[in-house]
Image (tube, rainbow, N blue to C red; front, side, top):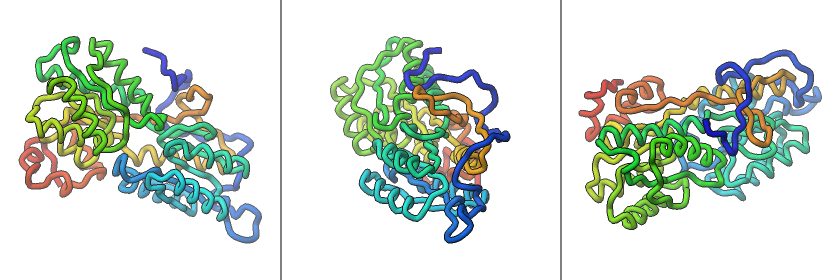
Length: 360
């Protein structure tokens, strides 16, 4: 296996679960403690900042919900806010949260904004969890196995090429990565490239990485023009970007192109059922949120956290397992409650839902 430039895998055993074992240390009190015994309780206050609403619908639809449910069930008071794609708003939210008191902070980075917040929090003795996206200064990083996410995406492209009868070494494949300011984007690309290039694929075009459907659509349209309208596969880092790519494919009547994705959002699931997207990588957000909650409880209880790996800078990394979803597995995402039957199985998709067993 090619060694990651961002990830140094530790020789640790166990699944992506947090194991609590007795250990001295910790700060901020337990979730039910008030900290100093007088005044407002801050030791059990969990402060969460989400990045935006544009890169993926998951942040508002699932992460906010599952984090709130999990943290409150663990005894935390919660303050969950979304920076809405604004680094200045991110900083303002953090200052407001810190002024009110936080026992622990869970931060999803947005264009590096989390690093400054982590510095302020650590100066006050507040532990910081990097949630989903890595950044310097966090005590722990809780996310999915992001290199594996990329490998599943690379395999998606290979599977789509095989279905179309195109040899990987002969295929025209465009690489459509995520925003390079997101530390996960490099991991996704690394895993995808590892699988695709081992099979003989080389990038025919690689526009700048973004987390934006409209920009992804424009970038792909320009790439397709540069390739004289010829494309066999597109490695796309998530479903939102894939929707932009697929719009261009539809406008040009290009069917049977291998297209990857990630997040199992409604549009992605519909595109898979209709044959425009080969597969997506499903990341059960509830599993990630539960892992983060366990780390938060451990930090405030002075307990040890068992991890699966570490980032290159030494940050301990708790990994949650991603799942590849093609048309046959869409029903499992709906059954798990991470996509609504009514949202997915609209009239134009109903026949495909029936074909692949997607039910209410």
